[in-house]
Image (cartoon, rainbow, N blue to C red; front, side):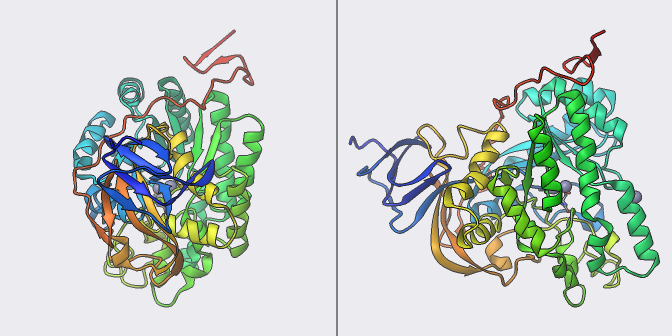
Length: 485
Ligand code: URP
Ligand code: ZN
Ligand code: ZN
Ligand code: ZN
């Protein structure tokens, strides 16, 4: 074999979503140039005894989002992507978050500046909180064309959630512009109703957070957004499915031919509602929405991960300091659960938790693991074939993974910017040895070495998986929103 590689990863067991094989990897100009046994180069990276995985692709990551006072995010694109590299993730899709009353175009320009210090590659979802005609008709189409090919909408949260009319207008505009729509699906009115009554009854501890967000809150919202998506022929991705009851809804809609996809996150595989009942105010470290549910729900999610209904494990990394926004310093330990902002950090824990709970415990095989954390997210979000796979021509984004090493997850090991990890003290088998972005090490020997600014913006192409539908409940043209009568 000709010696024209910049580097060779030698002796590892390469895992792709299609199979597991012993092969060397030749890297040239930041891309995978050869897959064969016996490759040589001056720079040889020894992967003997290790697995070689495609770099993780995390398509649900919140970084540097605006907050008010203490609910400010504890990670920007520097610390957040450091954490990603440490956890074996080389691509993220983060959010360009439109403030109410703000311009979406200016928001995206602002996020391009914020992301200039990223250490790994990135793209943006367009979070629309204020879908004015100007935003939907003038600003959205060119932004989608520029490679931000997904929109994010919330069905709950004050100041962020959209009402039904706004959801319909936003999905219709996304259909025209060619964007996939990602949805936080929970019934806002019911959550408010339940929260108010719980608090009035003095049931304010973190453990009552799941009481305010029972599974039916999620199920109803998925049904509602699916109906809108069906009418308008818009592809949708349901974010953070928390339990089999709602995954079953997704499966049902898919079987009917809807273009509906869904993810779950490590926190729904690792925690239960009991974690919210930890002593003192510790339970607040586990407040995220939809909430953690029961052990049998956790087990049930694996069924839907195996059958592909849930095609992605993303982190939903939403880092905030425990000592302030979670109420400890701000409101005292008696802050009620509904005052605590939802979200936890988890970028670096994503692969370790998915591997330990999935592969080590025999729930999924290695190929499915890689599919869930890298290949499928890359495909669904228009990043393939460049990202998410070990294949000739793909970026040499690679993770050397020790499947036998055990590690105890700690805050320091997460390399993120906040003051806690909900995974503190948790022992898992499987560990990132080193992470490579386009052939260069960004994490090795326990240290993040990829410098800020090395990450590149990824303009995403149209979705090949999504073909237009032909049959509608009424004569309707989703492309221009006209009735064909
Ligand atoms: O609790 C959560 N999931 N917070 C992060 C923002 C979101 O809803 O995705
Ligand atoms: Zn409210
Ligand atoms: Zn959400
Ligand atoms: Zn989120």
